[in-house]
Amino acid sequence: MKIVVAGKGGVGKTTVSGTLARALARTGHEVLALDADTNPMLGVSLGVGPEQTDLLVAVRQGLETGETEHERSTEGFVERFGRDAPDGVRLVVASRIEQANPGCMCCGVSPEGLLNELESDGKIIIGDLEAGIGTVLRLQEGQADVVVIVAQPTAKSLNVARRAVEMAADKSALTIVVANRVRDESDLAVIREAVGDDCEMVIVPDDAAIARADREGRAAIDVDPDSPGVRAIVGLADRLAAMAVPA
Amino acid sequence: MDATSRAPRLAVVGKGGAGKSVVAATLARLLARRGHRVLALDSDTLPGLSLSLGADVPDEPPLNAAAEQNEQGRWHLKRGIGPVRAVQRFSTEAPDGVRVLQIGKTDRRGLQPVRPSHNAFFQIIHRIDDAPSLRDWVILGDLPAGARQTAFNWAPYAQRFLLVVEPTWQSMLTARRIARIARTMREDADFSLVVNKVTAEDDAERVQEFLDIPLTAVVPADEGVRSAERAGVALLDHAPDSPVVDAIERLADTLDVASMQRS
Image 1 (cartoon, one colour):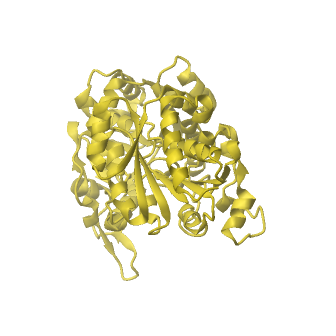
Image 2 (cartoon, each protein chain N blue to C red):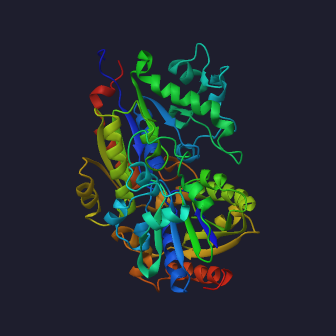
Image 3 (cartoon, rainbow over the protein chains, first blue to last red):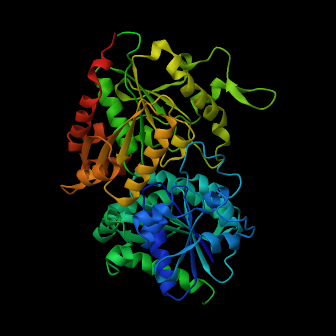
């Protein structure tokens, strides 16, 4: 099963992706977490540690610097450049912008390309996309089984979420909106109004433990697995785990 | 004003959600209220800056009319259009007299409808330093999230990069990477740090120590911003008494006042 996570910058995509990956791994599934953001931070939310995350070699840059002989299969990239994260999650960074004039990011190994090529083959792949709607637009039709769109109750985030929901309809069978940082009924109402009534929605309450995890550079599921926000994301993981082919 | 002095030219950069647009928009309007001519450069295809300025978002990118394609299919500025004409003809007005030049917003067709303006915008910003009549304009660019545009030279005008950073690891790591890239692009540029959404006493110090960039503003986490962001309106109109406005007023104070005097 292939799951992609999208939304405006700063809405909590990476926290949702990292927590989902960890929780899915705990259900017994083999999980590959693909960081498809050219500003890759998924390692932080998986619990790899901030400085370690910053040092991870991305597939594209690894190939460019000739760190290894060219391994032509996508599975080979994952094997060569992946690293283990807690709970047995395998983490792969697709591409990182780390220098001036990095060359066309769509040519060669691109985050979307890797995401499109990887076969789930019994495992669960979670792709944490780059901020904005461009990445959703570039997904091939039918490539993802589930598109998770993270939104928070701000006009800017909802502008992105509304459009991402429209586009996701062509890309996957199931779209789930994660209503993040919800404090009250009125927060929920603005999100519901923006994305429409047809969308499945998972509510993640505003959560001090998640805020603390962001500040400390740790995985939210390690900071407090029982906090309301983490529990809501784990609930979504359980639902997705039940949809996937049993491990 | 002598021939070499110039009003400040800033690029606001940082991770998504750090508060770049709120800082850029509020700063632009406050400087305009002080009597400066302010040009906001919006190179984000998302409407963040427009919302934070309290400006309308045009349906079609105005700059589409500034570009044409040659026989090889390459886009270039139409004859007679340079930075000055572009600002005169294709910038839109935001509250307090701020002028906005924008790359244009994407819709579900993707980048294709903004391709002419995308190209026009890039060429204009690369020639903006050569325009004598824009020398006394404050130029304030709001770049999209992350390092992408910095790496592809979308802030060639910037004398100073204003890094907007939250006290979170993701935000700090992103800022460090952007600063590293920007330094190789623009060796003469300055960097200054705005620590945003501060809740703990040592937040600003922690971020400053990590990045080792001069701290110019400490902006508190604030319910006024939260509620303005929810409504999608300008902080200055929604919560003018917010401590965030105070903090950005002080940021405006720190910009080189002498160079900002109109000639």
